[in-house]
Length: 184
Image (cartoon, rainbow, N blue to C red; front, top):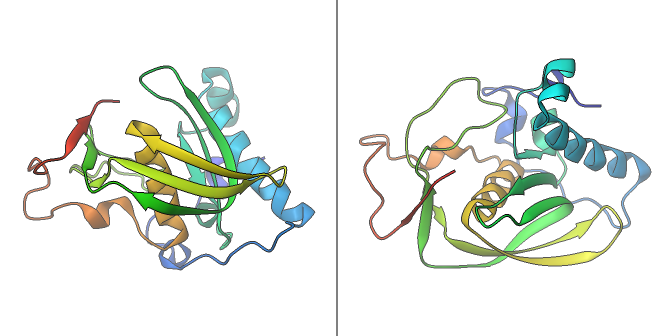
Protein backbone atom coordinates (compact mmCIF):
# COMPACT_ATOMS: atom_id res chain seq x y z
CA UNK A 1 0.00 0.00 0.00
CA UNK A 2 1.24 3.48 -0.91
CA UNK A 3 1.55 6.01 1.91
CA UNK A 4 2.50 9.70 1.95
CA UNK A 5 6.12 8.63 2.56
CA UNK A 6 6.14 6.92 -0.85
CA UNK A 7 5.14 10.10 -2.68
CA UNK A 8 8.16 12.06 -3.84
CA UNK A 9 8.14 15.82 -3.36
CA UNK A 10 8.55 18.82 -5.60
CA UNK A 11 12.21 19.23 -6.56
CA UNK A 12 12.85 15.47 -6.92
CA UNK A 13 14.45 14.92 -10.37
CA UNK A 14 12.02 12.11 -11.32
CA UNK A 15 9.13 14.59 -11.40
CA UNK A 16 10.78 16.32 -14.39
CA UNK A 17 11.48 13.18 -16.44
CA UNK A 18 9.39 11.65 -19.22
CA UNK A 19 8.00 8.27 -18.15
CA UNK A 20 8.42 5.17 -20.33
CA UNK A 21 5.55 3.34 -22.05
CA UNK A 22 4.40 0.20 -20.23
CA UNK A 23 4.83 -2.92 -22.37
CA UNK A 24 1.58 -4.73 -23.11
CA UNK A 25 0.52 -7.05 -21.69
CA UNK A 26 1.70 -5.49 -18.41
CA UNK A 27 3.77 -7.46 -15.92
CA UNK A 28 2.26 -8.52 -12.61
CA UNK A 29 4.52 -5.94 -10.93
CA UNK A 30 3.15 -3.15 -13.17
CA UNK A 31 -0.42 -4.27 -12.48
CA UNK A 32 0.30 -4.19 -8.74
CA UNK A 33 1.80 -0.69 -8.94
CA UNK A 34 -1.17 0.63 -10.94
CA UNK A 35 -3.63 -1.03 -8.58
CA UNK A 36 -1.88 0.54 -5.57
CA UNK A 37 -2.08 4.02 -7.17
CA UNK A 38 -5.87 3.68 -7.42
CA UNK A 39 -6.08 2.21 -3.91
CA UNK A 40 -4.23 5.26 -2.53
CA UNK A 41 -6.55 7.75 -4.24
CA UNK A 42 -9.68 5.92 -3.08
CA UNK A 43 -8.40 5.51 0.48
CA UNK A 44 -7.25 9.13 0.63
CA UNK A 45 -10.85 10.28 0.18
CA UNK A 46 -12.12 8.29 3.18
CA UNK A 47 -11.70 10.15 6.51
CA UNK A 48 -11.13 6.92 8.48
CA UNK A 49 -8.39 5.74 6.09
CA UNK A 50 -6.85 9.24 5.99
CA UNK A 51 -6.51 9.16 9.76
CA UNK A 52 -5.46 5.50 9.94
CA UNK A 53 -2.69 5.77 7.33
CA UNK A 54 -1.89 9.51 7.49
CA UNK A 55 -2.99 10.14 3.89
CA UNK A 56 -3.42 13.50 2.22
CA UNK A 57 -6.60 13.54 0.13
CA UNK A 58 -6.20 13.45 -3.64
CA UNK A 59 -8.23 12.73 -6.77
CA UNK A 60 -5.37 11.48 -8.93
CA UNK A 61 -1.89 10.00 -8.72
CA UNK A 62 0.71 9.17 -11.38
CA UNK A 63 3.46 6.55 -11.16
CA UNK A 64 6.29 9.13 -11.40
CA UNK A 65 4.99 10.59 -8.12
CA UNK A 66 6.06 7.36 -6.39
CA UNK A 67 9.37 7.41 -8.31
CA UNK A 68 8.26 4.84 -10.90
CA UNK A 69 9.01 6.29 -14.33
CA UNK A 70 6.29 4.42 -16.21
CA UNK A 71 3.16 5.72 -17.92
CA UNK A 72 0.49 4.82 -15.34
CA UNK A 73 -2.16 7.01 -13.69
CA UNK A 74 -5.08 6.55 -11.33
CA UNK A 75 -8.04 8.91 -11.01
CA UNK A 76 -10.98 8.66 -8.63
CA UNK A 77 -13.44 11.56 -8.50
CA UNK A 78 -17.09 12.45 -8.81
CA UNK A 79 -17.93 15.38 -11.07
CA UNK A 80 -20.54 18.08 -10.42
CA UNK A 81 -23.24 15.96 -12.09
CA UNK A 82 -22.57 13.00 -9.77
CA UNK A 83 -20.73 10.84 -12.32
CA UNK A 84 -17.92 8.76 -10.79
CA UNK A 85 -14.68 8.57 -12.74
CA UNK A 86 -12.59 5.78 -11.26
CA UNK A 87 -9.83 4.66 -13.61
CA UNK A 88 -6.40 3.09 -13.40
CA UNK A 89 -4.79 3.35 -16.83
CA UNK A 90 -1.64 2.16 -18.53
CA UNK A 91 -0.22 4.44 -21.26
CA UNK A 92 -2.98 7.08 -21.14
CA UNK A 93 -2.83 9.49 -24.05
CA UNK A 94 -4.83 12.58 -24.96
CA UNK A 95 -5.94 11.92 -28.54
CA UNK A 96 -8.03 15.06 -29.03
CA UNK A 97 -8.90 18.24 -27.16
CA UNK A 98 -11.09 21.31 -27.44
CA UNK A 99 -9.80 24.72 -28.39
CA UNK A 100 -11.86 26.12 -25.49
CA UNK A 101 -9.97 26.41 -22.23
CA UNK A 102 -11.05 25.84 -18.62
CA UNK A 103 -9.48 26.25 -15.19
CA UNK A 104 -10.27 25.50 -11.57
CA UNK A 105 -11.39 28.66 -9.76
CA UNK A 106 -9.65 27.50 -6.60
CA UNK A 107 -6.45 26.61 -8.47
CA UNK A 108 -4.83 23.19 -8.56
CA UNK A 109 -2.93 21.26 -5.93
CA UNK A 110 -0.70 18.21 -6.08
CA UNK A 111 0.23 15.42 -3.67
CA UNK A 112 3.89 16.04 -4.58
CA UNK A 113 3.67 19.77 -3.75
CA UNK A 114 3.49 20.59 -0.04
CA UNK A 115 2.58 24.23 -0.44
CA UNK A 116 -0.31 26.17 -1.90
CA UNK A 117 0.63 27.78 -5.21
CA UNK A 118 -2.02 30.35 -6.09
CA UNK A 119 -2.89 30.85 -9.70
CA UNK A 120 -5.10 29.70 -12.54
CA UNK A 121 -3.91 26.74 -14.59
CA UNK A 122 -5.24 26.88 -18.17
CA UNK A 123 -6.39 23.47 -19.40
CA UNK A 124 -8.42 22.18 -22.33
CA UNK A 125 -12.14 22.28 -21.47
CA UNK A 126 -12.74 18.88 -23.11
CA UNK A 127 -10.40 16.03 -23.94
CA UNK A 128 -10.56 12.48 -25.24
CA UNK A 129 -8.19 10.02 -23.57
CA UNK A 130 -7.22 6.53 -24.68
CA UNK A 131 -5.57 4.01 -22.37
CA UNK A 132 -5.55 0.42 -21.18
CA UNK A 133 -7.20 -0.66 -17.93
CA UNK A 134 -5.81 -3.06 -15.33
CA UNK A 135 -7.85 -5.76 -17.05
CA UNK A 136 -6.32 -5.18 -20.47
CA UNK A 137 -9.33 -3.34 -21.93
CA UNK A 138 -8.68 -0.43 -24.27
CA UNK A 139 -10.85 2.51 -23.21
CA UNK A 140 -11.63 5.83 -24.84
CA UNK A 141 -12.95 8.47 -22.45
CA UNK A 142 -14.57 11.77 -23.43
CA UNK A 143 -14.02 14.10 -20.49
CA UNK A 144 -15.01 17.61 -19.47
CA UNK A 145 -15.03 19.69 -16.29
CA UNK A 146 -13.08 18.48 -13.28
CA UNK A 147 -12.47 15.05 -14.86
CA UNK A 148 -10.80 16.66 -17.90
CA UNK A 149 -8.61 18.82 -15.67
CA UNK A 150 -7.62 15.91 -13.42
CA UNK A 151 -6.65 13.64 -16.32
CA UNK A 152 -4.59 16.45 -17.91
CA UNK A 153 -2.82 17.05 -14.57
CA UNK A 154 -1.93 13.35 -14.17
CA UNK A 155 -0.86 12.88 -17.80
CA UNK A 156 1.37 15.96 -17.41
CA UNK A 157 3.21 14.06 -14.64
CA UNK A 158 4.07 11.38 -17.22
CA UNK A 159 5.76 14.08 -19.29
CA UNK A 160 7.68 15.77 -16.48
CA UNK A 161 5.33 18.77 -16.34
CA UNK A 162 4.05 20.30 -13.10
CA UNK A 163 0.74 22.20 -12.85
CA UNK A 164 2.43 25.45 -11.78
CA UNK A 165 4.42 25.53 -15.04
CA UNK A 166 1.24 26.86 -16.71
CA UNK A 167 0.47 29.64 -14.21
CA UNK A 168 0.94 33.22 -15.40
CA UNK A 169 3.74 34.21 -13.03
CA UNK A 170 3.29 37.94 -13.70
CA UNK A 171 -0.39 37.86 -12.66
CA UNK A 172 -1.35 34.38 -11.35
CA UNK A 173 -5.00 35.27 -10.69
CA UNK A 174 -5.64 37.08 -13.95
CA UNK A 175 -8.75 35.48 -15.48
CA UNK A 176 -7.95 33.40 -18.55
CA UNK A 177 -9.63 35.03 -21.55
CA UNK A 178 -12.44 32.93 -22.99
CA UNK A 179 -11.89 30.10 -20.51
CA UNK A 180 -14.57 28.44 -18.42
CA UNK A 181 -14.08 28.73 -14.65
CA UNK A 182 -14.86 25.44 -12.89
CA UNK A 183 -15.79 25.24 -9.23
CA UNK A 184 -14.69 22.29 -7.17
